[in-house]
Structure formats: structure tokens, C-alpha cells
Length: 111
Image (cartoon, rainbow, N blue to C red; front, side, top):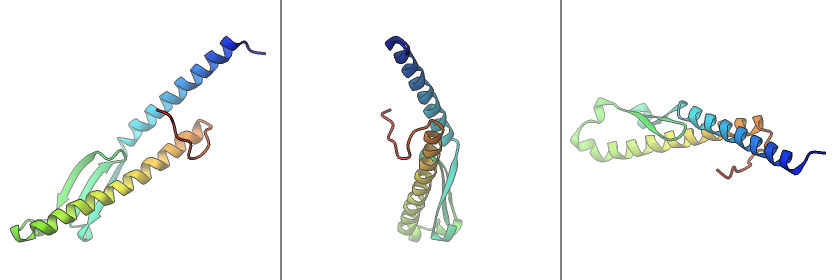
């Protein structure tokens, strides 16, 4: 039977391993890219799976003063599309990381 000190040490090591894996997963999420689209592809927003916007592409046809309101709406819609996709990718990656740690699906980490 292990002593209490050995069990505490093992628990600390396990926590450190989990923390390291979670940090690696978070770093990976900041490297994975998704693209949100609106207006049939006239507006595109690229962002990471963590939601950091990397780039915005706007078709020249929308760069008219009379199209300002529509352009604003399309940018918001493209960002929201990208955000939904980034959340989905992030959830998939976190689920993979948790499986690798032997944690049950949907387990919420207290970090």
C-alpha cells in the first residue's frame, strides 16, 4: 500500500501532466484556423479556434458608401459564422485532449 505522501505526490504529478496537456491544447487551438463567410462569400473572416481574428476579406463590390450598412451586417455575420466554427473546433480538440487524459466526455476542467 502506498503511503499518503506517495499518493499526494502521484496526484500532483498527474495534475501537472494534465495542466501541461491543457496548455498544449490551448496553444494548438491558437494555430487552428477557421473561415466565416457571409454574403455568398463576399465577406470572409479568418480566425483561430480560440476566436482571434487573423484576417478580413471584403469584395470590392461592397466598398460603396451606399453599401455601408449592408457591409457592416455582412462583417458581423461573417464573424459570427467564424466564431461558431471556432467554438466547434475548440470543443472537438478539447474532447480529444480529455480522452487522451482518461477524463470522461464533457468533464469541465477547473482551470
